[in-house]
Length: 360
Image (tube, rainbow, N blue to C red; front, side, top):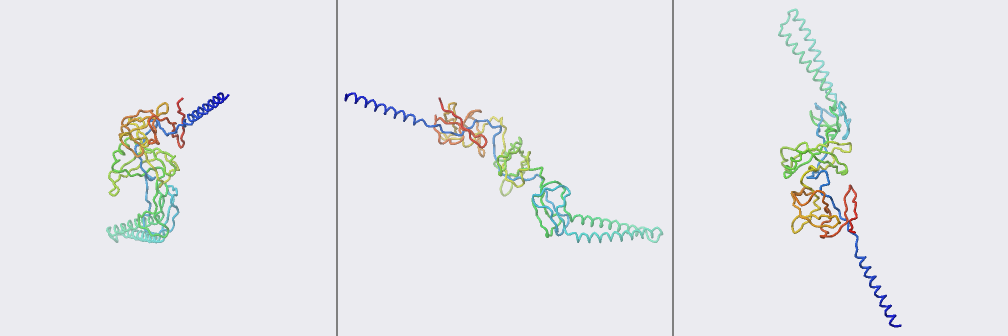
């Protein structure tokens, strides 16, 4: 009887040990860690370099009065849309009105004098030279009268083209000189981004100008993307900053693009280029050499050395080491080990989607 009890106790103990072992084995199976990956060469274009700039108009015209005077009225504010012929401001017309009246009186006097001399010449009481002198005086008085009338018209400042008032540079009560800018008007249909290119990137910028492809994003809303084209690069560098001023036109600008906004211009290389581009975050140092984590079909990762052609702002262009269509890890590369299995995650817009890659 005692022997049977001992055997039963021993069997129960074995069962407990086996269950505990099974429990430990199940506990060791941990879920796969999601890792952000990317398929090489899936984008239509590759970022080469990027610059911050300011949205401006290709045509920025300073407007001012053609005569000196005191501003008595300003009819538009900064940001106002204007059309050709619209009155923007007025000067005090008192002085020009007096000048016009005086010139008109002198014209009438010269005209009467010329009439009298014509009659005297007909009767041969005066010489032809005397008549010619009066005729010349009449022409001068007529020109002076026309000039005075024009001066009166110049007290009204009108827009000569459609656009947007970018700046107001003078206020009511201020005395301005001829040609002094009172407004700065920008053409709304010729928007572009003003950027500065350093000397070290000048060759790249000139190469990009050959293709003319660029992408413009706004700091206010980086989800908005517009097509751009490098229009011009200054021939000389700024003597202080040693950068070259450049303009990138916005081909498909809409009302959300406003003067003065901060914008980023990214120059793009053709998507069918032989060189592949990957994010800088994908690089890993393997014995001092650049490498990437390659993701296999079963979700396991392995290191592969690559040869870098050049570094851009956020990307790396490769000479060799990867093929189009291969999947690599682009984040968290310092936390992986060779042969480790991961759960694939991909960036799709503003969301990250994962795929189940657990081996069966």
